Length: 430
Image (cartoon, rainbow, N blue to C red; front, top):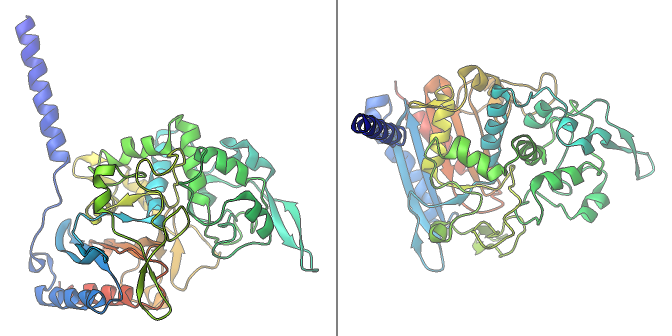
């Protein structure tokens, strides 16, 4: 009997190992022509994108394109570091900044599906300090007064960036600039904080907001606060939750809030674009557009920045996006239901002004009117990008995933995004 039990256990173990192998299988590659794309036109795109490196406008870049779930174009151009001439490779690691938001928003929707939270619920249910939130209102004399929020901030407001919460003094600052300055919370970089993110989110509640909930689209700490909600609901760190629920199941083995030291040499260096167009290495330290404190041992590692903290690779992020494109599953690994993905990639702004032809869902921008937007793509396309000049989009109509990673900030004046988009859609011939 013991032998039978042992044999059964062995078979079960082998089956589990085989299942894990299948789930961890790489996205397969194919020739573009086999999935309705032109080999010749993608070669032309390759030359166009390399020209930004050859001209010294960009130090290095990694691009990955998937159609019908197959990798049809993947390239690494330039160098990770100019000083030592380290070549860029397809497994190079990038600070993906606000591309973190889509992953953390997915974490919230996982908990929503399980009934552990409801995105229609008030934020104050999870972080009580937000029950007393206020809005700064101009007083007509160059100052401001405060008034209570017109209604409770909901988790859906945070997911769609309609909560009224900004980024302090960064971006489009509100009236309470001095209070944000005194708080020490400046910009989107929070991984250097010495307390868990839910403590930081609670402290934010005392600072007057930019607008009342549901009135404006304002880019800000929304997803960082959602990360704090995840910690409150699960009793675990945001990093541990994301690892267990998203990164491990999708085999995103090179995506980290804090990079293991043995992988640090694969991180691309951050560069500034100077006024004369030249590139200079960004400073060290904890500020925005710096080399940052992303490696294990460089920071307290207690603050997981859900709005901008992750480091990833093109391969890993493409796996996440393919999961979204495939209705919440990658192979046999299901993260979300198709209906949840549909909700996340629908426009939630209603009559709130945004960009021409665009709306915003739960973690992604979405295309609502292709003609009004005026660039190649499809209605229903969703995507976003990061502060270090990375971008991505998913086009369900064309069964397309695009990941473009580079590492500098700010990328003012470059037209690489538009040429990448034009080249990809020019290559679709079927």
